[in-house]
Image (cartoon, rainbow, N blue to C red; front, top):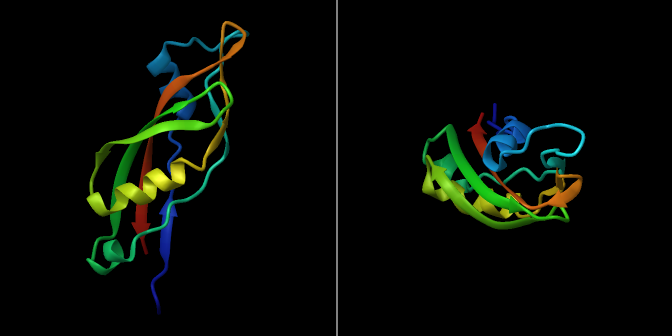
Length: 118
């Protein structure tokens, strides 16, 4: 049976991480950014051909006041060939922006993206 490529974008507590990064306290006037559109990254063929089955790339970026992703960079990576795919995908994501003191605010977020080949 032919193996299928499967990618999991781990949005492991985006809101909890955003809270810790910007020091927001969730209340009536403060809210972390919330993803409203995510795009799964492509698994590069070189990664699957190399015999690897899993990989992890942590991407750090700014969610601006409009909910767009800005300044995406790789924070850490288990496999270099996954980095560009993770960055390309994250740049397409959109968020409901964070709210700080009742107003939209730009905040930095780090998201781990897990790649799995089945």
